[in-house]
Each structure stands twice: as structure tokens, then as C-alpha cells.
Amino acid sequence: MTTPTIVAPVCATPEAVTRDYAGRKAAGALLPGETPPAPVYRALLGMEADEEGEGKPQREPGRYPFVMSVGTPDGADDVVEQSWKLDRFAANPVAFFNHRSWGLPVGRWERVRVESGVLKGDFVPTDASDEGRTIRAMLDEKTLRAASVGFIPGRVTDRSKYPTDHPLYAPRGYVFGENNLLECSIVGVPMHPEATMEGKSAEPVAEPAPVAEVKVAPVANDGPDFDLSALERAFSALFSVTVS
Image 1 (tube, rainbow, N blue to C red):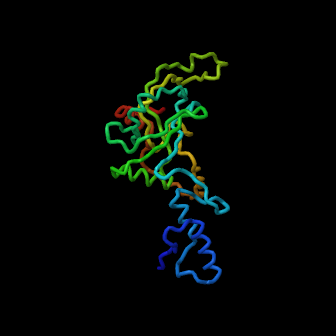
Image 2 (image 1 turned 45 degrees about the horizontal axis):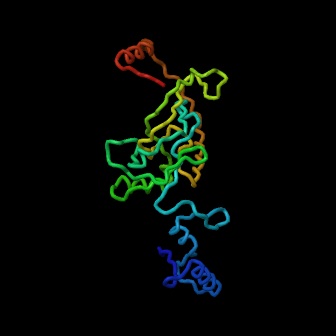
Image 3 (image 1 turned 30 degrees about the horizontal axis):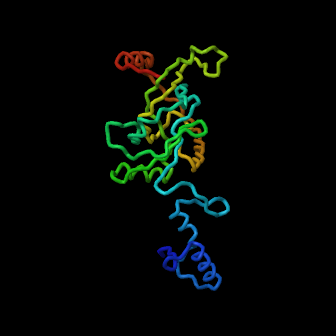
């Protein structure tokens, strides 16, 4: 198997290397396994190719821009107003994984601000732990791409207490205002679906392949009828199950 190579003069600029490659390709003088230099430079500079093959910057190396919080109803029908108090957080801008604040941080947040009505910040993973390096790799491959805030609300209002014609009215959920940010975590599943990494769109999820219907002939049963309701009652007596 031939290892791809890139030939570049010492201290050459990307433009010079690209011109050199094009000239040697036209002359049929490329080395075995030599590849175009543009994708390599894009990878080094934290860039990705668009549909036309041109590079466009996605993020600064080592930084992952996130939407941390949004002021529209989340998965619990709660509304987190973007009236943030950030002084306490700025003194200790830690990032955890899944809000595990009892463990070591997996990175830190920088440039945290309210912009265009949402809370934004740059996640910088740590290289000082295996978990931080793992999260960096999973962000790069887009396996992880969501965030969630931990905060102390200064004001809590039941949404059902608003007049029914009020924009914030809902049968359930709360409105949290004057919020004091404590931490923001990288998470597998965010409470708000829009609290995600910026600059890289999610890949479309493939529809599952249809499963062929299999017809099974009924099996004769000469024994007594099975009482499924009795089994359900027995289990409910043993285990308390809550569905929300």
C-alpha cells in the first residue's frame, strides 16, 4: 500500500506549493502516491472544503464555538431568558461532561457572551486528561456536538400563571430569569435542541431499511389461558414506575 505524500519546499507558502504541484502534474513529474496539497493545508488550518472544493474557515484550531443557551421553550417547556449574570462564571469558566461537577473539568469556556439574543461561547478542551482528549476527538468527528447550562435562576414564573393570550403561556413549564451561570457542559443530549456546536451542520440521519413482514403460523396451546393482566399487576406491586 502506497502512503500518500506531499512535496513542499521548506518555508513555502500554500500558494507556491499549489503552483509547484500543478506544474509538475502537467509535466508528468509527480512522485508515486503524491496527493494535491490543498486538502492538507485545509486540515492544518482548521478548514473544510465546500461543494466547489474551495476551503472556508470553520473555527479556530483548539476552539469549538457553541450556542450554549436559547430563549425559546426547551424540551421541558421551560423558557430560559437570556438575561445572564456572568461575573461568577467568568471567574471560573469550567466545562464538564454531562454536568458531572464532582469530577475534573474536561475543558474551559472562553468569549462567553450574549449575542443575537442567545448565549454563546467557545469550548476549549483540555489535553491534561484522557477524557478531555476523547471529547476533543468526538467533537472533531461530530459524535458530540451539544451543550447544556447549569445555573441559578433569580426569578421563576409558572407559565400556566400567565394569561392564556400571553406569548409565554403554556399548560406546563417555567420561565427562568436573571440567571446566574455556574457552568456549561458538553452533553450527549441537550435540553434545548438548538444548544449545539456552530459552524458544522449535523449529518442527515439515514432512514432505517424497511423490515420485511414475516407471517408466523399460530401455535396451538392446549394449556390454560395466560393471564397477562395478572403478571402486570404483580410487577406493578414490586416496582414503582414513573413515565414523564
